[in-house]
Length: 81
Image 1 (spheres, helix red, strand yellow):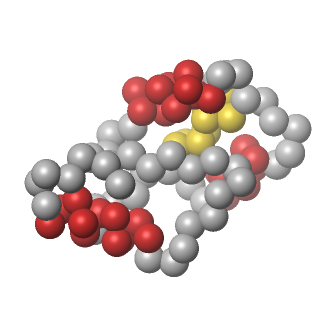
Image 2: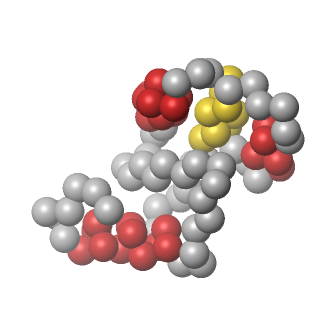
């Protein structure tokens, strides 16, 4: 699996989003308020081959990133999951 890059685009939230994200090595940007504009901003700063949008109310199952990358790598017809 390729190396992971974590980008967090926050809208000056009052919780500890920024601090927690930085503890995990994320690049943190303050931008908003529209979610679509935040996502576009994050993509502009991304260097990786694959993009995963994850919102605050979502949780990933263990191994899901590896699973998604493997599926994309195995089939050139796949452009998104």
